[in-house]
Image (cartoon, rainbow over all chains, first blue to last red; front, side, top):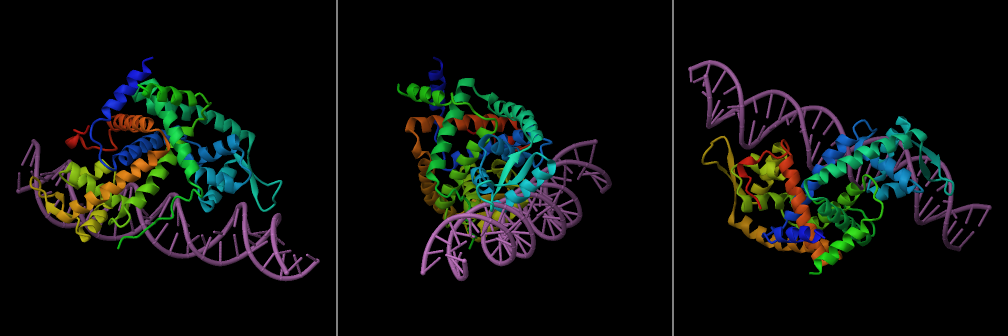
Length: 171
Length: 171
DNA sequence: CAATAATATGCTGTACAACAGACTATATTG
DNA sequence: CAATATAGTCTGTTGTACAGCATATTATTG
């Protein structure tokens, strides 16, 4: 199993002294790389990256209302309103009254929306694997798995998931 | 070496089917978790997270001018201008004329700035390790190393995003 | 059942950050 | 010296997050 070799190499290269804040720099770099590839991949999708994410969540997670949808993607409700407006205009989703609660709207994908999603999912998957193409395949698998685990851990630890309550001004 | 066990477990848990775009969701979750902890950690630092990053880069990387500094942190020059204004007002850095090029300004930390940075670096380091506290220590090490590798790879592959070849000698 | 609170969504206004473009001062090059 | 490039600053525009209020519906309570 040469995975161990990869791990050893990875752990080794970590032996270089790490600055506080360097993890953030690396995360930012990775996220920027991801976003730029993602943006290219969803070129033409209504509302771009956000549109894809919303459509994907609607199709694959079937949230009961807008609030649940927004909470999952950490999108503010007022932002989700005009995001959905745009997707409805594009004909990929519909707002229908929620069956159990007439205050709420259930978001369902149209057939067009499903077809569009399938089409773009291939491109997004390609973009994701291209992002990881610079490191070994087994390392990439490990990385993706560990990021997933950490994300789950953070997700579990965040009760309200309201991430921007600390917008402080300078003195 | 039980590191191999960790890797196996990680790779295993990946066997669950992954949606296109899920990597992005996970990355977003991790980055949000990081940022919220980071923001708490730099509470009181002038200009918050950005201020810390700028001060850290000034002290540890000694960029020759504002352009190099901004390129490293991927901060727009116009944004860096008022960010530095704020840091200068706070007395943590100074703008001095660059010795080799009188068009440019060299940013140097004051003694106060260095002291402040040291103080906050402890808090940031604690925040970073707290972020990773939910997963095994060896896994965290692997994750940090792999993110670093991937970040380096993306950094190398990006021609326009950070044109700081003048100072490309990082670990 | 009436009254009140809570919830889901929509709408409006504000604040801040990103970005493009103009401008000044200096460098470099032919 | 003239022409062009670069470093930094300043200004104006745009996009987006968020708070606050409004409306419709549901839940709760007396």
